[in-house]
Image 1 (cartoon, rainbow, N blue to C red):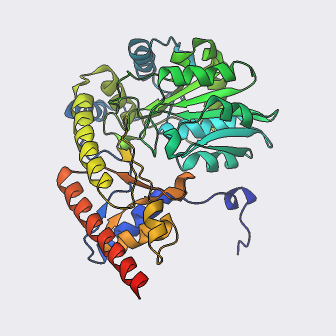
Image 2 (image 1 turned 90 degrees about the horizontal axis):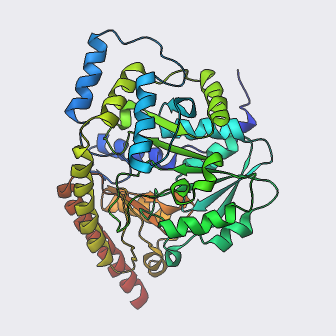
Length: 406
């Protein structure tokens, strides 16, 4: 019998978002009418021309191994995408195709980090960043950016967090879980700090690049500060923009030396991403882009509805988003008025049981006192979910008033 697991695996925890989704599925199986607002997955189908390209690749027998770093066609499509949309010039040797953007980030951490290295991560953060850092035997250093800061770190905070051990800074804009995006000026201000420290690399997680409706066009830190080009690794993928989450195609662009090291890591884990999915991703990047506009318009309409609903609920504060399909309301006011609920985790459990809606507690994102709501579902479901949430919060408020009178 195997009695002990590795220290490495004991340092990390399962994905909270997947855990909430699994709990919701259990309740559904038990006959509960659960509305899940927990997973970050577009509810749209993959566009037809992308699926047709994949079907043709199967019929053509394109079902064998590819090069570890991706097919020539897909890598060129990625190079062209960066040139066309971001004015960033890369060679195919600077591109790695992986099994999703998460895999790309994992490869990067494994290729760059050593025991004792520090990685600066702004909070609220995507749940996997700190644990992937720990898997690489490094240490996450969290900078908190709260509601009053619009969830964005200031240059002074970044500089204060930097030490001799700092190896990497993670930026995600637009952000999961907050939905906010840094402006070009804000990125330039952060870049001014980073330019002082030439040994620090930057990872720009741009997976929500196209799900954006802010006044400014999309900008990442290397676009804002080209001087950082040689030490910035840009992560992106097709999952969110093209409703291709299950196809599992992400990619990284950066210095050829780093990309080569990441490829070496990948060669000993998954080898190449699925050949058929690579063909589909190439069709997505090279083909008709109108699907992005259609989906983003729908997400903006849903955002506006959910924002208005949340802002009308007592005890909840909510910022408008710049993009993504998440909104991150502060529920501290509600928690403080409800003696039966002590934190965001208990509030999420209450809403799951009482309102039969599944949210993710903000604690999972390094932000206690918040919840993440995904509006990547139909407007009909969102209307019903907000109706239930209103009723559950009213019931909680009524119970609090009754308890105070007693």
